[in-house]
Image 1: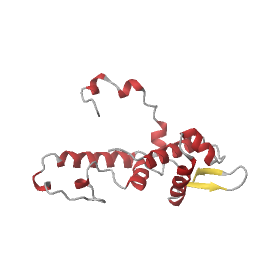
Image 2: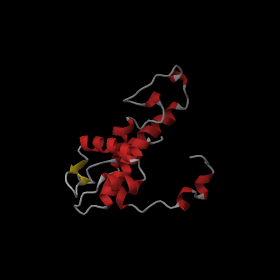
Image 3: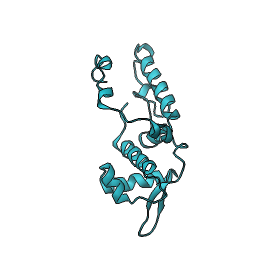
Image 4: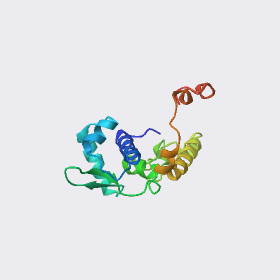
Length: 154
């Protein structure tokens, strides 16, 4: 599964709003700069986040964006599905954007991708923004752990 740039940027902004949660709105200019997102692109993403009622905008000189819901009420699954549509690694195991394959009835590896879809969806739907924010940051050492490196490319 690869998350789109839109979903990535939306998650960056949501976590920035959690991190800066002090009741003070954060301007779109600051959100763009802090998260290395082109401002025109971010404007569209913020409209989507606002339409989902995950963020609210505050007008005025000191206006900007704030979280509109508690971080414990928004899941990563909701955000990624909103921007990307599916969590399935291949179309023939997607429930919402199913793509038929001529080899489905004889495919031996489709079940593996079905399990990946199910486990990914379960994990993403249980991962609230608050619970994710509370976890420690991932270190480079963890990413390149020797035990996992035998599966290089993962």
